[in-house]
Every structure is written in structure tokens, then in C-alpha cells.
Amino acid sequence: MSIYRVLTAASAAVLLTGLIAPSALAQAAAPGVRSATTQGQAAQATGRPTSDAPAASQPQGAAAAVAQGTGAAPATPPAAASASAAPVVPSGDLVQTLAASGQFKTFLKALDSTNLTQVLKTHSNLTVFAPTDAAFAAMPQGELSQLMNNPTQLQKLMTHQIINAVVDTSKFKNAKGPVTSVAGDQILLDGTGQPLKADNADIVQADVRTSNGVIHVVDHVLQPMSPEAIAAATAAAQASASAPATEEKPAAEAETKSPAKPSGTKRRR
Image 1: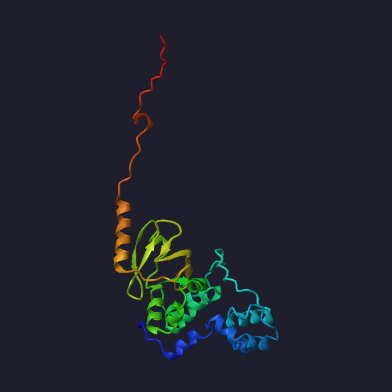
Image 2: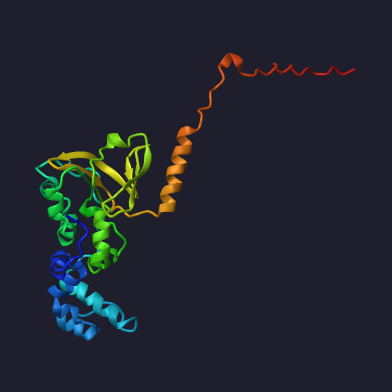
């Protein structure tokens, strides 16, 4: 069964469910406040006058009245994802394990939308690089929304996270090189340092063994690299590995310097 299918409109709609931007939800929740575009309308909507100078800017005055009338606290940036997230525990197959963890809602929606859920449930010996919800949230602004509206690109990105073979970390420990993904492109695996890496992502939990494959939890959505970049990285790693180690000379063989002669003082005649 080919896993590279074209998304249907219905599956794309399912993926969009629950992914409305928070700002849009906030606007829908307060239509009276949303329509307050001038100082007078803001005061009418909130029952309180504006506090900033009218001459400065009418939208500024409206914004101040909205904040005062609703008691809204200043916006704060979202908290960074905790590095000590609960470890993923095997719970059946690949999909069941991801669902039981609760950290992969966006990834599971994308898999379902791209007709990959059943593939991950019915096929064996797969490797999945699973981006957490925090990994999707870290994507550049607007990129995730664009993917949701581009079924072909979304499917290609999702299949890039999957390998049609079991590749645990023992396969690439102390090595660096590419492996072919289900999308047909290559994932650059790097086991030469800590943390282990896949493409642009750190592997934050490796070798979660399920009934039909292995999961590596990653902190970023894997992004395909160009063939040239992969070739250059692989060549550099091979050159580094083959370079002879430089031996240090024993201390006895080290070149010694003749002791400096003490400087005498000249006598005055």
C-alpha cells in the first residue's frame, strides 16, 4: 500500500479543527470590544473612559480603554517548553504510544490528515522521529498555517519524519550520515556528540520501542536538507574520523631550553 496519498478536503478540515489562532478566539469571544475602534466606541463598549491623550492616536485610546474596561493583563510571551517533559512510555503500537503520551497532538492530527495514521498502525519495523507539540509551536510564524493549507507539502513533511526500517541509536552512534526517509529524501543522522541529532533537531528521548517500531522524540520538526549540504556534512565527518591522531611527545623527549644565565651587575670603576 502506497503511503504517499493526496490529502482530501475532509481530512484537511479535520486537521484545522482546534488550531484557530488564539488572537482569533479572543476576538470572537468579545465582539463588543473587537468593534471598539475609536475612543468613543471603546468607552461605550467598556463603560470606562480612555486614559491616554486623544491627540496621540485614536486606536491607542481605544486599546487603553479596552484594557482598562476588561481588566486585561499585559500580554506575556508563552513560556518556554520544559526540558524535563514526562518521558514517553511504550503503550502498544506507534500511534497508541504517541497518543498515550499527550505530547504529540499536532503531530497526530497531521498524520491523520495525511492518511498516515493507519500506516503507522498496520506496518512494522518503522522509525518515527516524533516532534512534540512544543516543536510545532517553535516553527516560524505562519509556517504551520501554510502547511495546513498545502496538503501536498504537509504530507511530504510528515513522511520525512518516518523511515521504513528500524533505526535505533546503536545504528549511528559515533557516526554521521544520511538515511532515506519515506518521503524519498534523506535525513542526516549525527551520533558523534551529545545530544544525538537528526537534521536540525536534537533527539531528546531515543529508542522508545513499540510493538511495530521505534520512536525518537525530537525538539524540532525535521526539515529536509539539500543534497549538497548533506554531502558536505558527511564528507566533513568522514574526514575528521580518518584524520590520524597527533601523538604528544613524552616529557623526557620534549625540547629543553638551556637555563638562563643570571645577569650580573657591573662594578663601577
